[in-house]
Image 1 (tube, rainbow, N blue to C red):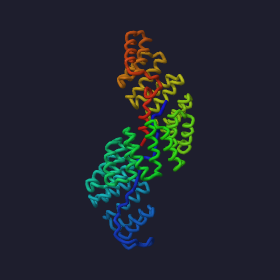
Image 2 (spheres, helix red, strand yellow; image 1 turned 120 degrees about the vertical axis):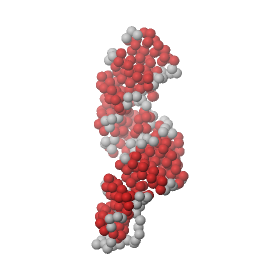
Image 3 (cartoon, helix red, strand yellow; image 1 turned 90 degrees about the horizontal axis):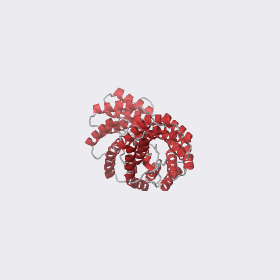
Image 4 (cartoon, rainbow, N blue to C red; image 1 turned 90 degrees about the vertical axis):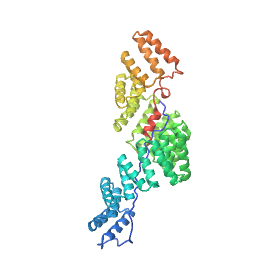
Length: 431
């Protein structure tokens, strides 16, 4: 099996960046002892925020609110401190209070949107960012963060549109080029993605994540040697980057260097023992080497970590087919099809497994399904014809073989996309 891209579970582009937007009205006050008024506590809380003393900041903002309960700035500061402490729901509650007191508080909408983004509450985040843009249509921060939400929802063109707007406001922002490149890659616009990554690296030549993402894009274009060069650069900058090891492993496997690929996956798993994608990549490399039982063991590990990953059931089914474990393979194809019913390849290979067990009529039903989903599936015509022949349906068999011959080419099972759409796997894993 050949991977046409890069397995990647990179640093999520939904990063949490807190924008501390609290008005500072007075000079700093004494750092200890009882303070004279709410404003003094407010200012000391701000100082504690800036120095990273978040628990002390919480105490100060709460004291300010005890003395002056209707202070929007204190709620804003309190929300920021709690967010840094990981108390996200409490931070939302405090921002709700700030907006109750100041319904047009731009920073409260922006900050609450960021907390919602971090919590995965995508629609709530979009609603807050939309409101922020109504208040300030040229807010760079909002376009970038709303773009992240759209990316997380799979609305990649909407994400690109927001990143375009952000770059109009700030044309030399390396992060925005990186994010836009990632969204373009998800749309398979690999050349355009690489152009964005190139520009980002001109702005910041030591950006590790950009090297990793550019490596993935090059691997998707089968530029595997260039991809390896990018992963090498990322690892020179950060030797413990598991994502770079995984990406380099994929590129090496694409070049037939399966043993070297396994070494990279091994290294990634030492760094991240629970990385399902390293197990998947290693399993595919082992499969390429004919180590089917070891491949099954790695797929088992991946499914323990991600039990709803349809494609892994399919891959494990293929390995079991290679071991002659046809009934177990059918069980895996069944599970994969429950999760992904429109997978033509899974229907086809389940048909093959059934045919190997002599279940020709059931096999024909699976080939029928595969051909409904993929009308030019030559191998499905061939194998349906063979199944019909075994049942004595000679006229139907001849018609299927003629249909296969009429197609431009018949690939041998195992070549290219006649079995796997591995690029789709890459896109699912590439955040």
